[in-house]
Length: 262
Ligand SMILES: NC(=O)c1ccc[n+]([C@@H]2O[C@H](COP(=O)([O-])OP(=O)(O)OC[C@H]3O[C@@H](n4cnc5c(N)ncnc54)[C@H](OP(=O)(O)O)[C@@H]3O)[C@@H](O)[C@H]2O)c1
Image 1 (cartoon, rainbow, N blue to C red):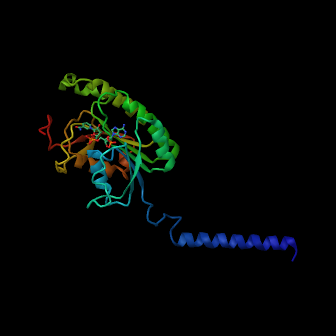
Image 2 (image 1 turned 120 degrees about the vertical axis):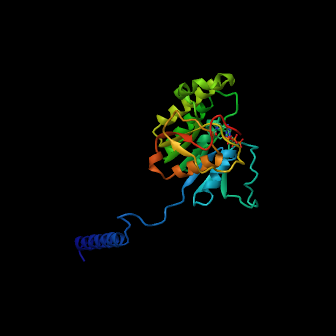
Image 3 (image 1 turned 45 degrees about the horizontal axis):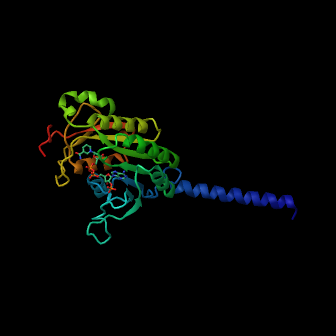
């Protein structure tokens, strides 16, 4: 057979195969909307060993999410041992958020769909959020993180003006910490990484059950206490909710008045 005829036959065969594939794809609905089960999301929880972090992981335990916890050397991993009765299956990354190389290494080792920041800053570093948010957002952006949920504080940045009459000036160092919280929020908002900011106020002890009454609100003048159980539920509910994207929320729990009783 002449070379030209051979080439024409091979080309015809390829076209036929491609058409067959397209027809079967349409028939199974793959092009019209993929019906295959979604791949489990990879979720990185910063502060996953903390009280709020644990409550959030508890909410995610019955979902197909693959959870990685970032925590420091020597952090308390009690309850996560594989032998523990309700232990969720988690992977671990050991590092310190204040060491940007640890954050770089974490995001280089794996791509995370969702990052949840439930870290609580220890007193004394008034530039904590400025430091960690710079590295977190840079890495989230370069690796295509789809959502960064950040637990911040009521009164962050300019929001403090709404709460001037509460006597916060009696709490040493609070204004510097809230200023840092504001810087962290701004770094996140301007990063281009899709985000949700949930500003927390006084958290009831972890033993306090969910009230079931807490809701997220964009009214940044709202101040109520909240339970970690409700906060964890609200966090999990934002994961697949487009209405949460690029919003800054306060939490309103009408059943828990201010000032807190616990
Ligand atoms: N408690 C309140 O009343 C209150 C009020 C307002 C806002 N909040 C907010 O609520 C959230 C959680 O508070 P919480 O009381 O549940 O937290 P928590 O139990 O005190 O846990 C703190 C977590 O932060 C982690 N962490 C701190 N510094 C870190 C660092 N440099 N590198 C890596 N991890 C670090 C700790 O990890 P290790 O295991 O490594 O120590 C731990 O998992 C925070 O967003 C906090 O700002 C709390």
